[in-house]
Image 1: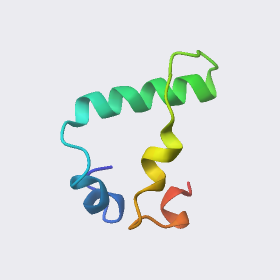
Image 2: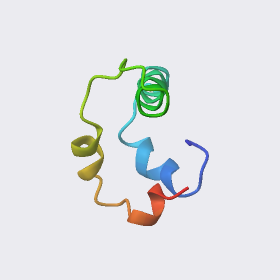
Image 3: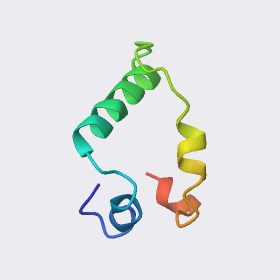
Image 4: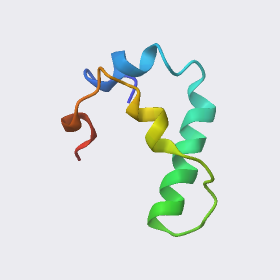
Length: 60
């Protein structure tokens, strides 16, 4: 993600330590895909404030 040409620069100024962030992302996706319930948080407000990001940045 850091090396990607689009989200890399957007996230570079926001994520100081990638290890905890990636661990949080893994917990989030485990909760969504595997229904583990291990993620407790609100990811939408944290990402909604990123005005540089566009809807296409979140497409797979």
